[in-house]
Every structure is written in structure tokens, then in C-alpha cells.
Amino acid sequence: MDVNPEGPEFARTYFMAGSKRIAIGVPKGVRLSVGDGFILLPVDDSFDGEIHVTRSSFGIDFDLAQNVLKYRETGAREMPQGATDIQVQQPVMDPYPFNGWKSLGFTWTYTSFGRPMVRSVNYINLDLGAQIVVTTLAVKNDAAKVDKIAKQFLGTWWVMPNKPTPAAPAVTQ
Image (cartoon, rainbow, N blue to C red; front, side, top):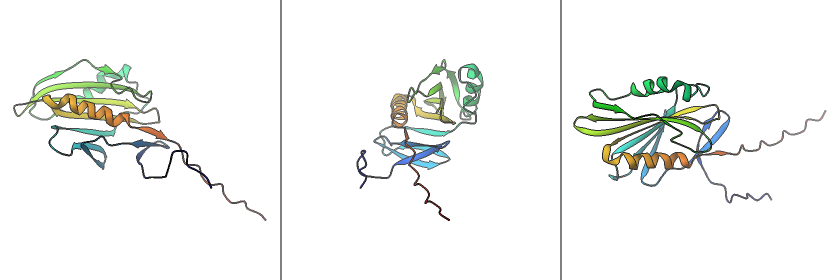
């Protein structure tokens, strides 16, 4: 009998990046919706914000540092209609320093319907053949909390070992 050194088998939530499985954990106080990516929303009224994780339209070979302006322009396209007092902060290299993945982030502050808002767009090279985009949106007072939850979420990600494939039965003639 083989013993699993990791303990008993249990279901893990994961997604595929190339041929690798990336396991994820959901931070306390949020619920995960899965569709064309992930959306994390509060379970209760603990914060006013949301986190979106989607595949990037850029390939992993599209260099982050050399294409800062193109990444910023693409992130700015999703600003809400009617936003006023828009300000963009300086880009940040490696805002998500997990698993050795390289990342580039932008943050905009603006006013929408009289509410001060903060929106960040972060491009992350998973080094597994995929680039993702993590977008956070929050009222200004909850922006730090939403950013912390996004980092907790990505901090749980790890590459699962490939399951060994059973050997094919020997064919005899």
C-alpha cells in the first residue's frame, strides 16, 4: 500500500496554465465565482470592492519592462464611463512577488458618481506559458483591504506536481 506523504487525498481547486495545474485557496471573508476567470467578492459588508483575475491578451513573451506604456494604455481602456478626476500613479514592478513570477502594476484613482475609487491593474507572468491580469476595484477607504485580499489570494497559488500516469500494460504477442 502506498502512503501519501501529504496526508489524505482531498479535492483542490485549480486551473491549468499550459500543462501545469495551479492550486488556489480562497481567503476568508470572500467568495469565488468562476467563469471567464475568477471574481472574488465579499461574503458580507466587510468591504466595498472586487477582484478580477483573467487571462491577459498579451503573451508571456511580451516584455513587461519594455512595454510599460502599452500595458498602461490597455489597462486604462477599462476605466468606467463618466469617471472624473482621473489620476494614474507611477507603475510598480513586481507588486505580486510570488513564486518568482514577474509582474507590473498600475493604479488609478478617480471619482465615479461622487465616490472616490481606486482601481489597479496588474499583469503577472506565471512563467508557465501564461500571463494573467489581476484587477482590483474598491472605494478609496477599502482599497488597501482589497489589495491585501488580492495578494493573499495570489499568495496561496502553487504549482501542483503532475500526477504520475500509470504505466501502460505490456503488450505481448
